[in-house]
Amino acid sequence: MKWTPPPTKSKQYLMLIHDLVPVLQLSVSPVIVISGVGLVLLSMVNRYGHITNKTRDLSTVLRKSGDDSEGHLHAQLHIMYRRARRVRLAIFLACLSLLCAAVLISALFLMCLVQLEGALVIVALFIGCMFALSAPLIVFLTDINMSLNALSLEFESHSINAGETSVASKTEDPAEDTLSE
Image (cartoon, rainbow, N blue to C red; front, side, top):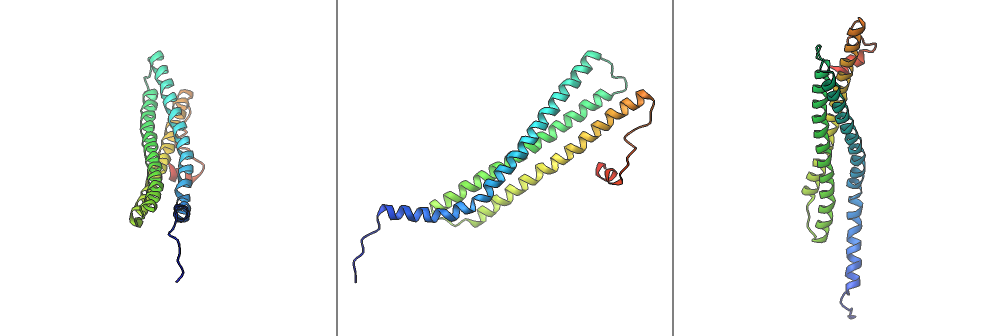
């Protein structure tokens, strides 16, 4: 038998890097999720800012004019408040998705470092991340529908003042009727 020297620290270090390569490969998907959700979150934050600015503008108009006999401004303000709440919920859920993805990456590296098998934890975090990503997108779509309702209110107020019939009931595309319901 030939004598072999005990492993040195540099060989242990190389072994650790060798063990990390699969973990780095596994963490690519959550990193891509973080990037994509970050862009969606940017869009939602911009939309939230637009809603709050529009609400402030409508509030200023109502305060200065004091006349909202037909209730259009109050209806607009009510819709804006509901939209702001929905977009805030969507932002919260998107942030929750980001948090799940970050915890998933951390868990992958920690499990590799302490050499634990935790496939169930990883799967649960990834599924949680995907659910937390799906929910804000659904809420975001409902906000878009609510913005269309606000727009139809605006058209109705101008149509009534001009003596025209309601624009909200006139659609050229039957698919639009289905989406707005």
